[in-house]
Amino acid sequence: MSLIRAFIALEIPPVLQNIIAQHSAILQKEAPHIVRWVAPVNIHLTLKFLGETSAASLQELVHALAAVTAQQPPFSISVGGFGVFPNPKRPRVLWIGIQAPPELGHLSHAIETACARLGYPAEEKPFNPHLTLGRVREDADQTRLRPALQNYQIGQLGAINVESVTLFRSDLRPQGPSYTALAHIPLAKLDP
Ligand code: 3AM
Figure 1: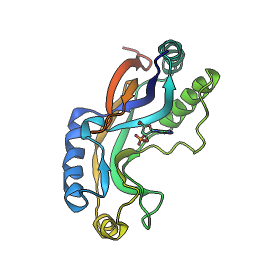
Figure 2 (figure 1 turned 90 degrees about the horizontal axis):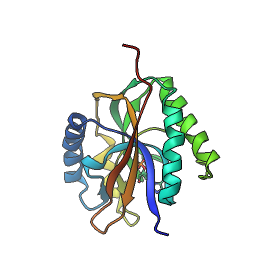
Figure 3 (figure 1 turned 180 degrees about the vertical axis):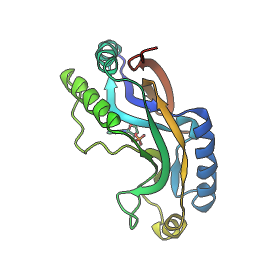
Figure 4 (figure 1 turned 135 degrees about the vertical axis):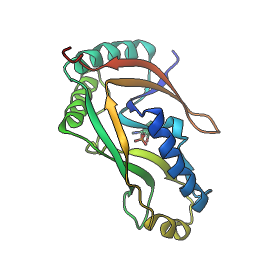
């Protein structure tokens, strides 16, 4: 049986992808080979990483997700700010921040619960929403990276109007991952 590497995420509007691409390009000049940069078209807000799963399980999951998202009216998230995980002394992940209303936490929790019911392993770390810009290479010379990052600032970039959740397929290739939307699962319709 062939397995599909999959995850659940919120998509970023193209206008925001373009703005993020400009920041990513500036940072890439500072640290080109130290970081594996996420292609701006691939930037998304991950809600749940599912790992390798069968097509049949994914179909079941889409049904379960539809029941969850039908309970959640659309909401808006602000995007802005720049930071690193786990800490500035030893950055591993470079990210753009988000400022979200409680609805995002509720949605994440409800998706996590639905996934757990279907047997997907629970997330060990608390939900910490962010947009990953790049991942520092294991063998990176951190002394070159730190000065480039410590003064870099990103202000408010715009908003994501969340109207659906996307199930993505991820294909890992030597030149970088390729993400394909398998299903768009709409949030509740607002009353007209
Ligand atoms: O967009 P971010 O970086 O938050 O880090 C991966 C990415 O999240 C994460 O799934 C998203 C799409 O690839 N991911 C990849 N492998 C993972 C794993 N084994 C993982 N998350 C948890 N466990």
